[in-house]
Length: 361
Image 1: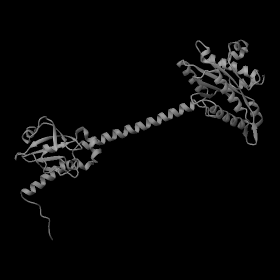
Image 2 (image 1 turned 90 degrees about the horizontal axis):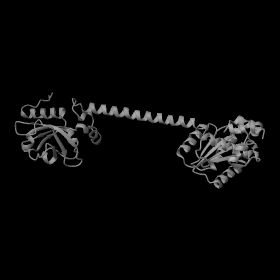
Image 3 (image 1 turned 90 degrees about the vertical axis):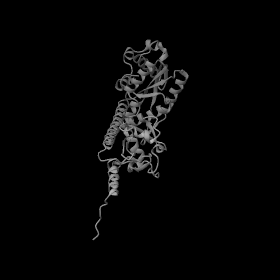
Image 4 (image 1 turned 120 degrees about the vertical axis):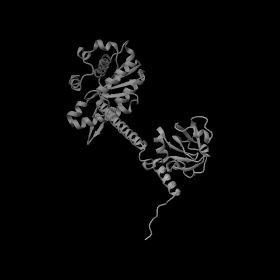
C-alpha cells in the first residue's frame, strides 16, 4: 500500500514556514531584499480579490503613512520595531497597522492588522473568525463590540417601547373614552398652554339641549350613540388646530386657537347647532337634540385666567338657554351682573349639576 511520504529538505522547511505564518499571522507579508512580495497571508489576500499580491513591490502596493518619507526597501528595513501605518494605494484604500521583522537574507516579514478599524473591515470584507489567528484578540474584541451593540439596540428598542407606552398612557389620560375627544384634563392642559403663550383665542362652551329626554326615553345606549355623533359633528365643524373636549355628561368645550373674530365664531356656532338639530337615527328611533353655546374671547381680559374664562363662558351659555335654547351668545360684562350668584360661583359644573339646573329652565 502506498504511504504518503513527508517532504524533506529545504522545501519542507519552506512549506512548514508558510503554513505557520498563514495560521498564526494570516495578514503577513514576506518581502525579499528588493522589496517584492514573495508570500502573502490568506486574509490579506482576501482584501484584494482578483489581484495577486505576490510579485508586487510592497511600496507600490502600499503607501507608508508612518513613519514618513519611506520610499525604499532599505528605508523600510530601518523601521524594525516601529509601528507601521500602511494604506493600500488602490481602492478601497484600507488602512492597516503592523510591525516589520528583518530576515537574514535582506528581506523582511511584515505582520499587519486592522487596529481600531476592525469592525468596518469585518463588515466591508465579510471576514469571519477563521480569517484571524486563533490567538488574535481582534475577534474577541469584535464579539464584545457586537454584544455591546446588541445590548444598546435592545436598550433602544426597550426605550422606544417605554416611550410608546408613556405616550399611550398620556393619550389615554387625556382622552374621553366614550367619544375619543379630549377630556377635562386635556382641555385644562391646552387652555393653560394658550394662556401662557399669550396669543388670542376663543373658548366656546356647548351644552346639549334635550339630551336628558333621549336618555330617559331610549336608554343610555342611545345616549352614548348620540354623544359619539356629537363628537363627530363637532370635529367636522371645527378646524384641525382647534381643541374639542368633553368635560361632562353632555358638556363640551372648544378652544379656538388664534380665532377671535366674532362673525366667524358665530357662523361656526350656528353650523354646530344646525348640524346637531338633524335627527340622529338609533335603531328604529330618531334622537332629537339641539345645543346652546356660550363663547368668551381672551382679548376681553387684561390678564385672562382659566377659571374666569370658563365661568364667563358658562354665563354666556346659560344666557343662550334663557333666551330659548338652540342659540349662541358671546359673553358680555353685563351678563355677569344679571347672572345668578350660584352660576357665577360654579363654572363648568358637572353634568348632574347642569341637568338638575336644566330641569328648572
